[in-house]
Image 1: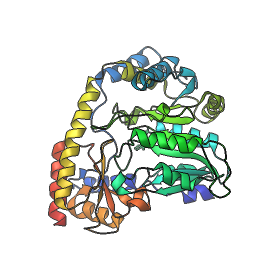
Image 2: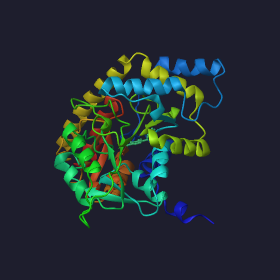
Image 3: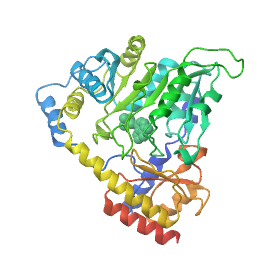
Image 4: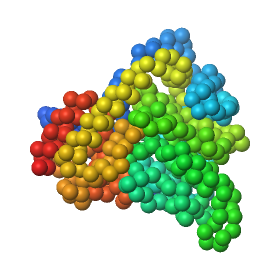
Length: 391
Ligand SMILES: Cc1ncc(COP(=O)(O)O)c(C=O)c1O
């Protein structure tokens, strides 16, 4: 019989939208995809060459469970150079994507009933990770005018002796918001100086878990890492987004040194290591030319500005301009308050796939998430179809 946990885990709706869209395509329909959260660019040639070179030269065995030293060195070099830090490779665990990295962190931190504070709207999978490991997500109400950002004061009010971590995501999926330096600093302060609002007593500092998978995809905003503000943090990042490598499954976790050994034990038992030749591709991504990344960022920005303009013309409300990742979370209540139903109608009747806000929590109900990880021509056509359908 199925376990209760397996029975209760909800689907990832965006994948369901995608699968339904693909079903319609198989039936001969021409669907515009604005639901997908993955770059439409191919992985750069020099990265592909590094992987095939590694395969050809026989690098097809298990690696060290923490990952290739050369890759861990390249990762800390990247963070240290970009943010003026002094991380060491011993703090890094290479994983098969950010998602297994999140699992490692939650597995290492959570006991039954432990709380993880996070913003609502949130990346759809976060509460599912926490609940699967017997923790409790605690949602903090956010305001659209602030880009749905997690605000330090609001976080402080939800902290209790049960709080085990604060989870942040900047640039954010689904909002596209980039947290300011002041906000990150404020959150670090709240995490490190915890007073229990129930009893008034001071409890232990809690770590910040910072999902930085969209780092580098910023448009006019400043790029930051939580590690500029606190060492008591677990940082998740990877190659899926910035290097257009979603299918390669490569990510990493940067953790305080004292957590590395237990995290490594979990990694050895459940994952062994990340793919060997893919790790060589990761070294090439970080140490190779970056011009292709700059081009992708410039292209995303152009699409972002166009999509924002068109969505507003159609009648969607976007009250705080998203300046990161490749998403716009637009208020669609003008056209219907049930986002699942609205996205279903837009897909079935206008042949455009978009993600319902409800996938990202109650705070995004009545909203739709539009992804601009799709060519400008597709976006133009998608906007045209939606306009024709709704107006
Ligand atoms: C916020 C966020 N975190 C993590 C992931 C998963 O990334 P990865 O491909 O590294 O597992 C995604 C993918 O869409 C995401 O949007």
